[in-house]
Length: 481
Image: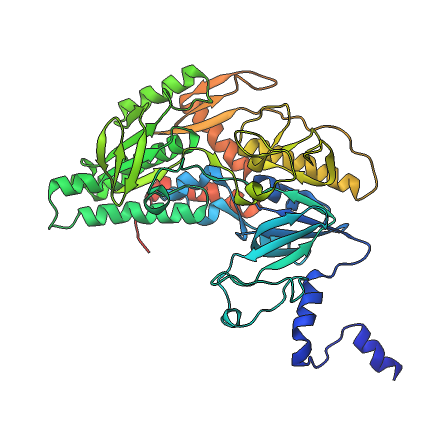
């Protein structure tokens, strides 16, 4: 009798009645050992993923909530979009840390800071039963659950400590048609779509029924945004056109054109002026058209309308014009925000600040969704990654009841941008230690070595140089699949 009861308490294999399945799921997903505090991380970007890697998962009960189940190594996305690297080189799976970490592929729609609860919506396709029945998930009671059509059932999570690292969305400046007809370059799915579209453009232009005018329109590749992302994608696309495309589509390669648009007077505005001029001169020598002080008024299928130019037909439009606030950040009205960017204000310890001016000791914000009050840091992966490392160290001190009052200090390591033909620029003119600038092959070697060392797993440290070598020997793969 005693043994039989003990087996039930210890959770050995027992028949599971159908009526208790929902309750069992609720207890399994939300329950945590009493000795561990719940740490919830929102977002798997440069900041959130760094915390996930470095935080003491034996002492914290860690939960990751992110609409994607992987970390995207954004500096390599432009290379993936043209086939220089394969897509797996630019991602790190979040699930590598399970079962130590509970991971939910979901969006966080709302935060209740008083009750310390999160309302989340699954980012997966709804199950069949969700169209007619409501099932409680991840600790939510049936009264807490809602299921808007086609989105699945909402659920709630509770936290003791919360890290907001949801990042930002691509800025469109409310230009009509951008979301419907332009490509962005924020994650691997975007890179895959761009790569597919590039091959489609050449295969369509190769059809014998098209005129030369139609071919030129299809092979007009437009990039809006003269920042590092737009410049690096233009450079990678130029390399593709003058290597594999020129070899396999010789007649079409001569018709292809790359145009880079920006509203600013110069591209690469965050770089030293001499480096930006170097980049512009190189692009012009390579045949990449640069149109600064140009304003896109609207975008339609296969064409856009530019104020200074009129109608511009295109086969591919890549839009990279900065950052827009995440909807979750926009929904928060109890915390201080930056007037212009709407990012959350934090103190120097990265705690969010309430509208009453008090720092919340249980909530931190990092990455593109946050900025330190009174300080100006660029919205880059470098800043988010350093904040993630700082906060992981802080959390590991907190869980051991040790003080960690040292404020965050950003160490500027400089900026890199690839310009094509194995040339790059490296700007350390604003760095905190050695100040220098490099151009050409030396900067390209620094660019490649930096991204190689920054890859976070041994697997990708092997894959990245392997694909670089294979593509150098055999060329990029132009297969569409």
